[in-house]
Image 1 (cartoon, helix red, strand yellow):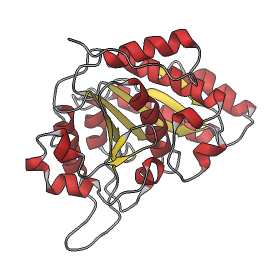
Image 2 (image 1 turned 180 degrees about the vertical axis):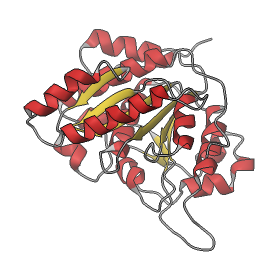
Image 3 (image 1 turned 120 degrees about the vertical axis):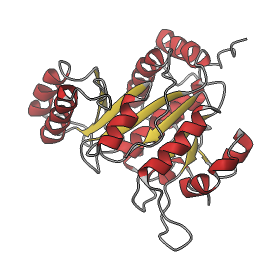
Image 4 (image 1 turned 90 degrees about the vertical axis):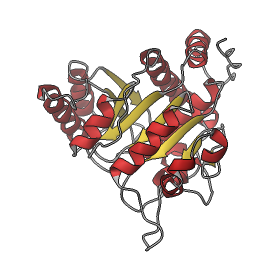
Length: 285
């Protein structure tokens, strides 16, 4: 018996779109994977994962979990979800014993709206270090057997291992900053990926453009008009001071325009995840 949809928080409008998204979230089978990457660093990728994950955690009856798969020592996703001592390294170390949600959630952080996250490891010692790319993906594969939806915060899409993770996902996102240079660089990456005929080449991803200013310049608008012919879809996230603040994100507390943009993005993703792929992504490198 499929889970019943959760009540839609009053903050999310239009009501018809929110209700459909909440119904789609309730219909998710176990194992949907959302792979989030970018062509460049510093574009707001972890912010998008945390904000989108916050909304999806409100919509999905069972828990939603995000995984920081960045192989460098940093705390980006953890800062946007909430405090805690566990990290993705703990999950890698305990991988043979992660047979239940209880075991997983010994190491997760919990965001204001219920999003669970395996934060990035910031220590580099003989006992702890950021996992290698394939180790983080092995954790994601295990989580897909336990949770209806896993968000994967990947490193930049320079390596074919990231491409393989995107190709094995139910939906793939590339995040860009709202500058002509960042968007054009991302579109060139998508075009290059689409020209690759190997099995690890992902299908055209969704493009998410994050604004860092209340105003959108004319050259950015011009590039965005071209983007729809390259990306599977284009979603713009407007400037929001709360997204710029390095603090845990609660999607319900964001500005109205931001909530609507995230709702439209989530609805698009949930529609694409209704028939998630079942193939594993372990061994990406």
